[in-house]
Image (cartoon, rainbow, N blue to C red):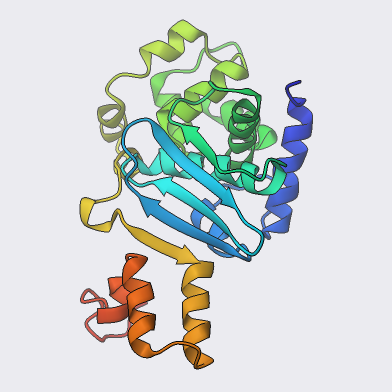
Length: 252
């Protein structure tokens, strides 16, 4: 049986508090995920049909995000996988598809949870009030772009949620799926939300794996050569060879 939406909202609020966030503000989902104990996060191109996956182990966990998808979609995917990590009792690997609002019961719950985590109902309601001139007005493409930019979500994610809330009809939502980048640029917004990770940065590992490699080196359990090998296998050549962009200078 599909979990009650109110219960999923409560779970989203609970995780926000656990990660040190309030119940309404937009969040940096990636930075929050990096702070979770025993969690390694891998960015890796996975083609067109898989958004991410979650692997739960006895001693550590892994979330992988499809870095070939847009930044906004990656944010939703991370929130989706955090549901599987924290609230899905299935210990097996969970592979999640690209399409939002489709799939089995657990996938639907994970999508709804992700939507609430990134766009809390009370915050979304308040923003809708701000963008509308009157409550009887229908949302326009300008309004939708403003909402997706504020919460940092993809067009697919915001349209999914607005149709769920009966703020848009399916027909209205369908008409807003075209010319996504142009609609944002023409309103003066940056297009970073709608683009994938640059090709030279699509492979990366963060979190527990990197911490453990550093820890075992300091404890003398591995050689510096093995340490570098572990980092390179995790696509962290920047930690082995340094980041040329910094140039040894202090950065703000």
